[in-house]
Image 1 (cartoon, rainbow, N blue to C red):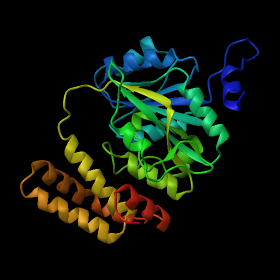
Image 2 (image 1 turned 45 degrees about the vertical axis):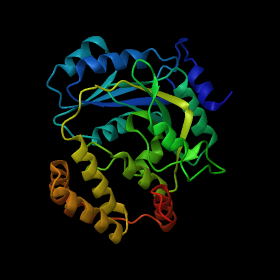
Image 3 (image 1 turned 60 degrees about the vertical axis):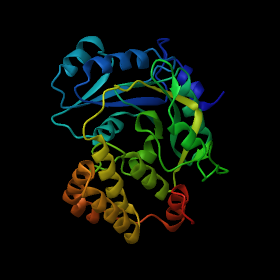
Image 4 (image 1 turned 135 degrees about the horizontal axis):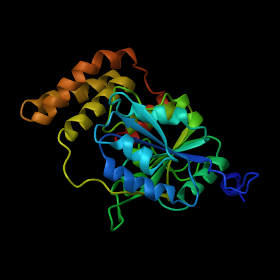
Length: 304
């Protein structure tokens, strides 16, 4: 039996089962009803995970609902919306060696957290596991599953699964020390396509980032379109380039966005938001190591 499985099944002196070595962090804002559904799924898991909810300044009664209906859940109440940095607040509160991330509309399949813990136990360099994601009541495979499984970076001898430099934020499990070593999610990202930068920073510190389809997450997103989402994703793609990629690459992406902005309002919005954040990005600019830059170009279909 693996260390993780043993830990998940141990009992304390009173005979009560201890929590699993994987804790769960949820960042939420004004999604009270959806969050309640998610928590009922997570608290029913056989692994008995600790759960931390980080509330990004909700005004819809989220905190009252948590205190009333889920007193066993730890709550970090932020005074305002900190975006993706809320997840790092949750990681710091947890003391489990591994941390699974859920959104307020996603949860983990029974047994998946124990599987993830076993993979981390068996592979000391493993920093983050990207799960297979099933979407909606029908459990349809997310198209990203095939993209990750088919990563041209292939396997590594000391890692499980397939090496990747991207993942879905609500379907990832991280080694807590690796996440904090990499600095967690960057505050400039806020939300939207923030995962690539964290994958880069983990890999740059020597941590493995892999897709392991035996770890499964369920995602039930709101079908309503999210206004502004395309612009935010484009903004973060460009900011990631300025933060970590070579100057010619960042300039080429910028020129392409400028060209699109002449006729596309989403591109104009993305360009404006990038320019506001660009000075901060340049202050934190750190190029990827050469081997990672080659890997990033391979993933983008360019010659290494």
